[in-house]
Amino acid sequence: MSNPTVSEALGQELQSVGVDRVFGLPGGEVLDLIDALRRCDIEFALCRHEANAGIIAAVYGKLKRTVGVVLTTLGPGASNLMLPIASSLLDREPLLAIAAQVPTSWPAERTHQRLPLVESFRPLTKLSGSLHALNCRSLLRTAVAAATSEPQGPAFLTLSSDDARSVAQEADPGVRPALLNPVTLRPAGEVADELTRIIGEAQHPLIIVGLGTRAEVSEPLRRWIDEWRLPVVVTPKVKGIIDERSPHFIGVVSGMAIDALMVEAIRESDCVVGFGLDPVEIDGSWHMEVPMTWVLESPWATGLAPRTGLLAVDHDQLLAAMAKTPPRHWDSVFEHARARRQIFLEDTPTLDPHPTPTSLVRTLMSAVPAETIVVTDVGSHKCLFGQFWESRFPETFFMSNGLSGMGYGLSAAIGASLARPEAPVLTILGDGGFSMNSQELETAKRLGAHFVTVVVADQSYSLIRHSQRSRGLDRYGVDFAPIDSVATAAACGIRAIRVEGLDMLARPVGEAIRGGESLLVEVPLDPDSYRGIL
Image (cartoon, rainbow, N blue to C red; front, side):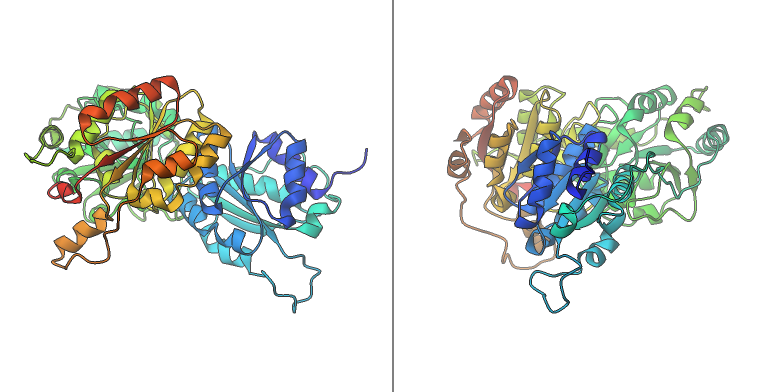
């Protein structure tokens, strides 16, 4: 049997780590690799833009428990990967980006589409390198290990068309690279004793759970919170890791609606424990101003770690060791949870028939089952749903909050639906964000991704408009003409409707979710209705 080509070796390696789909756009330089993937039973999922393909891949990999892979051509195709790679880094999602590159045999004077890709992406990735016949297997394995080890993030590799067709000279290394953790973990029993002492000496402790907490520790984490009756808040990227109907749940912190109320709860605590907390989600500086204990099992997304207050420990082992009698029970900061609930249930009286922000959240919550995966784009609606949507289960809420890049919502919904086809998926987008990549609805239909899309139509970048108002500036450069989301969806083969009030919203959304059908619903919302809650 002849030795495989580099493309064939790469396909074999990706297949061995559970990759069954690669997302991207083709180019002449990657056709050999695409064909090798096909022969390894790895689907090449054609998308409409490389940035969207990368986001789809990262969410897909996150939910499939493997690396998400995006493949592009060189030059402009590779350049379009900047957004998903940055998103993967700051939102801690596992992404392997492979881009074509000009062959090393080309003379330096041949500059068409030549860019320093490896050097350009190195500062934004956990690993950046070039594949060739002598390293194709070992470098790919190292890149996969880098992308999937905590903190998860992006790896970037280039492959020239000459190298793709060459015979792989590297023998199968036989072993997988170890997942490196630059944080030195301490014995769990030792850390459990120290953490018990720290909490026991406090009068008003508060636990903040962040995106450095794996979904797998949800159950023991919930037991610890419940048995010790500890007040707990979460950051948006881990919504659902704590059941948000728990009597100990206070709210969501880090730039969501009514954030001042949540920060007030933090400042009134004399012991703040950041369990997996990563400041990449924190839009503010309170984490540098309050007494913090950081319980981490890996560095932050940026590779840094706190200089003080760090308890580095395996979370599974720690939570097992914390199953002991709590030092006392507390009743602090629960008034903030009651205030949050009251805000959620109240609507400002208005003669406008359009829904209010909180009533929109309540209506959609009543229409879909608790296990629905909810994805939001970036904008005012993200702040509302991030704070008030009651997430009950891990990995049922996705948003971009480290990078906070618009255009995430639709792409992430495609990735979530393809990774978990049995799960209902609901995505909420603003009309501004929807217009950035609405063409991927055709991709969703073609690939068999089914989800309900709610487009909140306020004809404005309302979050920026709100910021202008708060600074006393004139409204300028934030409003646009209506975008016909219904016609756009129909052009992509997706059933779509427009509703004027909440009484027309719940039924079609619920029926589509229960039937596993794709549907787009456009809902008007007054951009000024966010006033007082953001």
